[in-house]
Amino acid sequence: MSERAAPMYCPYCGEDTIRPWGDDPDKGHADWRCESCLRVFTVRYKGLTGTD
Ligand SMILES: [Zn+2]
Image (cartoon, rainbow, N blue to C red):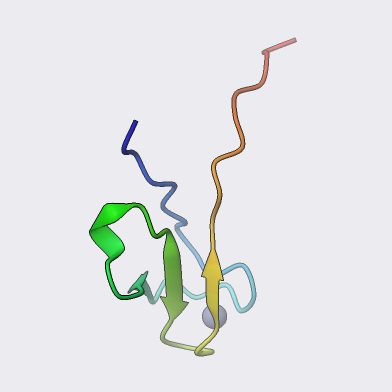
């Protein structure tokens, strides 16, 4: 499992100017930086849910 959760928008300001962030973003460091508000955040995969 090497999939990263990729946010579509910054959860803080709502802009879509987010880029991978960190020293090694291709190896599972799911850090993202918003170029609009300059916040850095992490999106974590927490598991699956049922449909009912
Ligand atoms: Zn932002």
